[in-house]
Length: 191
Image 1 (spheres, rainbow, N blue to C red):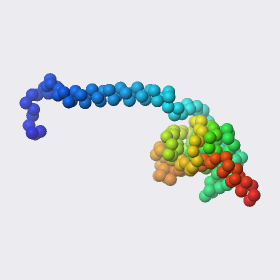
Image 2: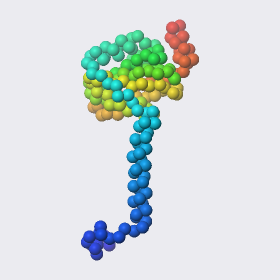
Image 3: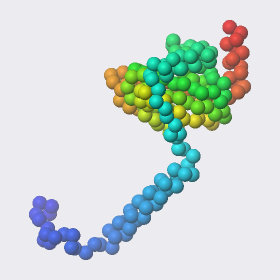
């Protein structure tokens, strides 16, 4: 009965059952395996994000993003510019209460350098459904290299609580292949 004290007050001197020893041994081996695999995955996983970051004034970063949006804008969605940079171009995304700005359209299979910074608070950049998560700070310009491998619409979610509108802080990244992007560009030019 659990309400009464054990007969032997010094329970750690009691012999360990064989089944318990087996489970302790299995748990220890599993822990070693996971520890080793985390180190190995760092080198063989090809998922390591760039450690490239620079100090930047929020106002000058905002100017960079606005110039980028003006240069590559192809249309608007709900008042937010959709930009389609050329493959290999630097892409600028801005976090501010409570949006990721602008919407970006990238070409599948092409590499881009994505620049991220915030104007006001710390925000989180989480590209869904991929496993890219970065904390984005004002005064720092974070740069990651990205090569989209599949078409679709990918959501950007802020995963750092940033205030009352945090739940609405989303953005988009469209990924299209070259033929699809070319056909859409011709439609824009005809308008």
